[in-house]
Image (cartoon, rainbow, N blue to C red; front, side):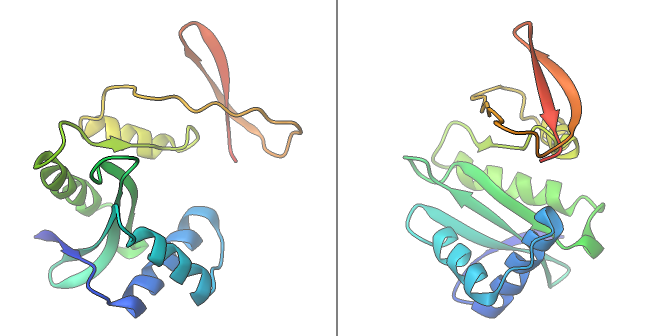
Length: 161
């Protein structure tokens, strides 16, 4: 059983999860103050921060954000590494969809082009409409090319950073 619990001031728990999120995704070690800035942003007007609960335990978080309307962007989702691979994240996304469906005709998500696992997961969960494409111009080579893709007959590099 997976559920979402809206943040109600449980700062210590949220800060630990946010620091774990950045450590797992970017190998960045955040201070409490840096994590607190994220938490303040992610709980500010136009945002909703939920704890992901499984079997009575907090195993991650989900952040919905607004880019001009009610929160309809799945901005961030994180399941603690020990709990990954059990379908918890997929169930949490489904719960977020049910929330957003109450006031919006769609839900949006972004994924880094290099994050093939996330893109495949979101596609499997029904995210099948390309909405926007973000392009980046590198001035110097700081990362390696992971792969190449075509969009509208144009070649693009997928980089590891």
